[in-house]
Image 1 (cartoon, rainbow, N blue to C red):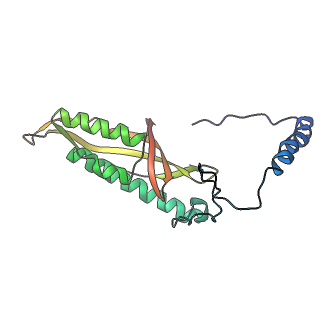
Image 2 (cartoon, helix red, strand yellow):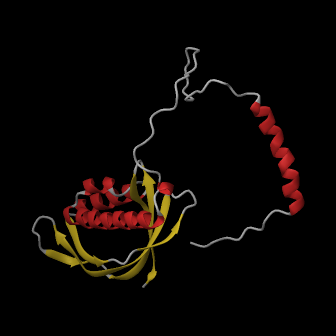
Image 3 (cartoon, helix red, strand yellow):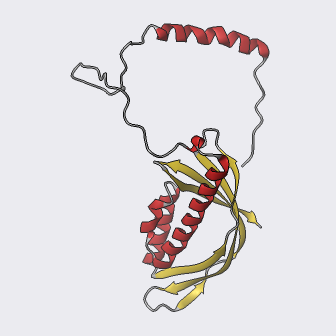
Length: 196
């Protein structure tokens, strides 16, 4: 991931933008209503004047102290790694939706189904050393970097249980996006980087 420097606007443009931005705001201010509305569409011609709906019970990521947030994200990342390992060992991706989300979830499910159709199962042992290296401004995404070392990995026949080959091993850096979704942290994407 590379940062791209963007030059700031010249001072004269910033001064000119302020009055221009005030015009649409002044026009929109006259469109307001003194009655609160939930914004629901009522095609029969009435407005919803009820107050806002109940708040969600899960705290927003921005409301959690940083140390606690990072610990939670790392714990969820480790839970994802355990579910990932189990899914390939059993050819059953049913535990993945609790710890992963699309687009990664769809990719993994497709790959596990492909492995199953070949009559194989994969078993492997990884060592992990995850760290948080960045966070989105709104706090809904946390980025984890990890040097994943595959100690051993083998393919087995699903019918006989005999070992049929090795899964490529090695140590590689993985950059993973852990995203806050519907009250839970889930892995949304992961990219293999250089060797570590």
